[in-house]
Image 1 (cartoon, rainbow, N blue to C red):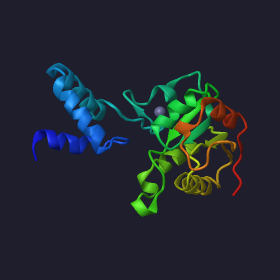
Image 2 (cartoon, rainbow, N blue to C red; image 1 turned 45 degrees about the vertical axis):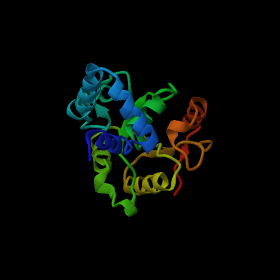
Image 3 (tube, rainbow, N blue to C red; image 1 turned 90 degrees about the horizontal axis):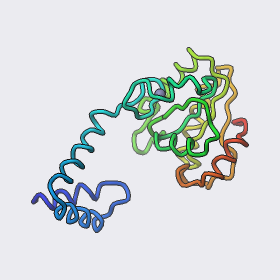
Image 4 (cartoon, protein in one colour; image 1 turned 60 degrees about the vertical axis):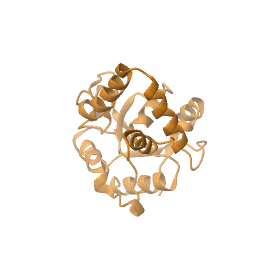
Length: 197
Ligand SMILES: [Zn+2]
């Protein structure tokens, strides 16, 4: 396989990029000068070299612990549990949440062989053990995997003296947090309800 074909094949593995778009990107890159390709390549490489998971909350960060975990202005008694780092951005965009985050880095999915040990659940539990956490807001996506993960976490946390809440309904079922509009998400954060098993 030649260089161009190989690049098209790899680009088409990116989320939301089909073979047609992959080919369009590859030909676009061919036309641009070398410095563009080099800086793009360097940036992709830097992602893996410089950005790590925060050892506290699991969020992607260049500094460990991340700016959220070390920000003295944040409410250290509330943790909002999300699936991915991008959900942190979505929730931050509402301006309604001022506590800490915990990024699971995925959801439980037995079919794909993803179990609790592949997520950051044990790290969440140790944060609860050592901190003075009053409330855990479960903000997993309203999907089958998100709900399964939420239930598992609630069970694991049942022995701790905590208020466990979830985002209020109004979020599109089966959708992702990132597709919810800001107002809906802000409303569902404000109107969060106790997690009933
Ligand atoms: Zn952090």
